[in-house]
Image (cartoon, rainbow, N blue to C red; front, side, top):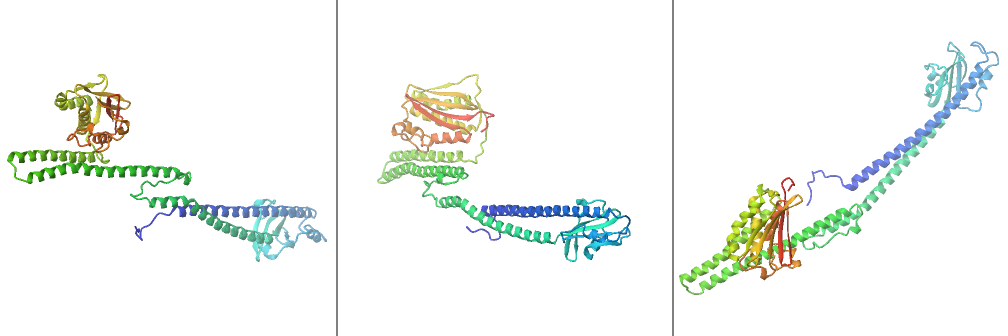
Length: 470
């Protein structure tokens, strides 16, 4: 399905990761280039300051010998020789009136330094950077022995070196960033390869091949929980599809029998003329089959309602003991007819209050008691026990009789499941009673189960006690 062309879509994971890595790596390289450039610049500044300090000290010693503003004859060469061996050094000496006494510096440099107030001593804080006639200088204006002294050195070599270094560093940073971007793209693509394989496998899963599973061993460790969760979801889907397929087949089988009976009886009745009594007999037989259909359809509708996850039950506080005794009253005639006794066991000191839907609870109790009555031999007793199990109240229905084989126990709560004809009499029940019991228990946040052995079968439902949550 194509998306809306005008709709904005979130960025892909690959684009996000690539962008973050590119910006981070670019910022790191840029910061490194700036730090290296700044460190070298600071180093040159320190070297220049040491050179200025040496020149200043040499000039101080030279100017300390003469007195007054005028220099004695022949003293000019001494100032000229005060600093030797470095043509990048520039200095000038002015008298107190600002007139030049000696100058070995370009006029442009002296003009740039004219507005600077002289400092009493050379410190890094009084060092200035001047641009004059296209050249760069670092220097200071000092007051030495009552004279104004300008001392500076050319930084052209340093500036050219730093400019070349910055260009090389930035070019390297850009190249390294581009290389990192390419590496990040390849790494992300390689890292997402398992996701693409998983996506391709998932895309190929349909209702016809729900048996396909993802192999957690082929997925990275970070994706293993996702793969196992997806496999668990597929297990549930496959089980649901199988139950639905079986349920559809069971419905068709269960509905076919009464419909076939109705058609056969009707065809036989129409085959020749019959008396009114015979027609009434056919109608009564058809009525039984229709009643069976009605009960089956009603049970299926009730089961669908109970299994609805959005169902909101109207609940009230109920006394479980009173509800069980009410169920006994309903089945009393049937039990007497079959010679079966009904007994209730519980601890009088325990509270058996629960919060439940009364109609559904009665339906579950009646289904359990009805099932027990159908399979309890004459002269025996059905025992209902009430007990607390942690934060839940449990109802147990015990009935003697033929034990159920273990392979059938896990399927008893499935729809239309029959153990064998010996435990099901024709015309009794729809095969949905125990499935309804389980659905009602789960709708209340509880569970249902069964145990059988040694001539005794025990069905139970466990419901949350008030305050334990549902």
